Image 1: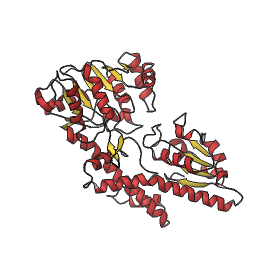
Image 2: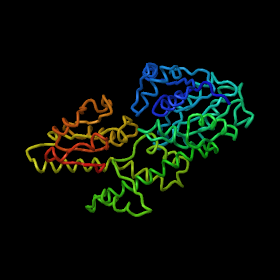
Image 3: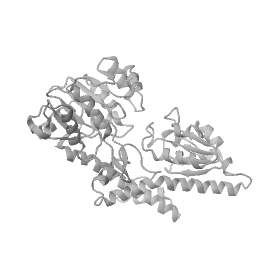
Image 4: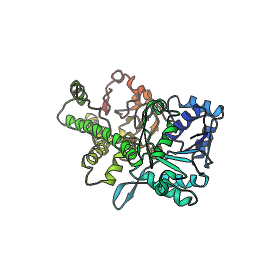
Length: 424
């Protein structure tokens, strides 16, 4: 099948890089997003997110006429949907998958669908979401046939292909990583694979839509369980006065042991979210996955307790002062190093909570953003690392950005330090 025009629905951290990479192969790409600022920025040849190498690719693709952005879907040969899949609260459960964005995207593209089109859901989704998307499309376009009723003979092909990239390395991994492609029929799988083979150097492996959905959830749940083990170790080691960093380094010398590094929690749009999709579908069976999520979700509160302990130490050493006199410098808000992505960030949750309970000053150091999130603007200030260190009584390291690894903290005089990443 020829794919002369490809539409990317959603121009965020996954959609924009994917659109740009396809456009760089000299395919016409129409990017669609409800964010007018993002659309205008992209059409100038600029980007609205931080991702290495992406700015050059977008600028070139726009300049050469292969990529443009709009707020309204237009006809295309293939539609790739990469929109958020957050949670909603329902019947006392805070982790019910919310498919509202997928539903909206489906209804937005339905009017421009034509016989022979391919629709691929890239959003990480609970099992069954691709089938639900097909149902929404069929309801909106009764004049077309879809795989759930017509099978291989359907007018529209539908598949699921979850992204599997690491923020900070998205451009490279979009091309190099293998892709798992699950169609609603074998023919849907193969048509979708033919699109990805155009710009993916990794292997394109076909399966069913449900298996592809579960594969992505399984990958991130595996990592979440491993991180939970490291985070639990850090809490245990703190209680029995052992350096968790040395312990893990020594344990990892075993040829079949590879423990990950602990941190302030787990963030991002995947690892902190995807395991709950499995738990929501199989709450009685997903016991280990649920426990790992609870361990990682609970780590920010443990970090806050450590900070409060350090405040107590400071006040004991300075009986003439109160908590209002204590300045805390918080290093990092992003959910991982060297990006600007704050989604589900444990660092951000910790700092927001600190802002609500600590009466003193908060100095925030985050080299990848220019404006603080709204919740922090009233009682925290964005500072350079040197200014924050000079002002602070307590240093709280939350994200191991490259800039922070270069800091010589020991040269700045005595400071109370809470280091959740083990770099100071």
